[in-house]
Image (tube, rainbow over all chains, first blue to last red; front, side):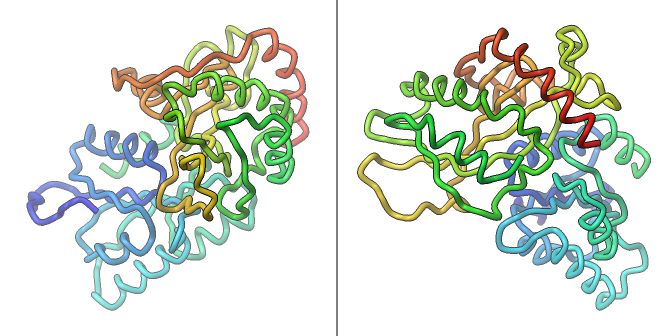
Length: 132
Length: 172
C-alpha cells in the first residue's frame, strides 16, 4: 500500500485494488491523468484496512488471493455504515467472469458498476470521467 | 477454455526450463476461446528459446495460470488482419496473461504463486509474446521498454483464427 499520509485534502482519492501489476499500473495512471491521488492495494485485506471513508472511487478486482473483491466490498460497505459515512464510495468491480451469477453477486455485495475483463480503456475512462 | 485442457496442452510441450503445474482456482480461463490451445506449443517454444533473457541458466519457470489481460490492447490490427475477437469492440486484441513462477532447477518445493507470480503476455491477434512492460508500452503508447520474446508465425495464427471467431459466435 502506498503511503496516504501526505495526500492533499482537496484532491480526489482513488484506490486500485488488484493483485495484477499490469492492472495496478495502468488503472493508477488512468486515475492520475484525471487528477486523482491514487492508493494501490494488492488484495481485499489491504483495501479494507486502509479504507477510512476518505476515498472517492475504488476499482475492485473480483479474483484476488487472501480476500477477494466480493468480501472486500462487503467489508468496506460495513465499515461505511459503522463510520456513518454519508457519501458511499463508488466501487467499480473488474472481473474476468462474464456469467450473470458472478455479476449479480458483485452488485449484491455493494459494487456500483461491474466491468468485464479485458477492460476496454474507453469504457473505464468514461465511467471515471463521469465520476470526476 | 477448460483449465485442465490448458494444463494438458502445455504439459505436452514442456521444455527443459519451461514447465507447467496445475493449481486450480487461481485463474479463470473459461471465457478464453479454446481454439487457441494449439498455439501454446508455439508459445512454449518461444519461451524456451528466450531462456537467456527470461531466466538464468540454472533456473526454470513453472506456468500455472492464464487469464485475459486485465486491460485490452486496442489498435487497427484486428480489423486489418481480419482477426476481430469482440465485434462490439473490434479494435480489441485477443491478449492473455500467462502466469508463472521462477525457481532454481534443483528446487522441487511447492510453488507459492501468490508471493512470486510473474507473467508473460501473449497477443494472439498479432502473435507477440512479450513481458508486462512491453505490453504496457503498447496499451499506453508510452515507452516503458520491455521485452519481445518472440512472434507466433502469422500462418499459424491465420489457421486458428476462423475457429476462434466461430467459437466466439457460439459463446455469445
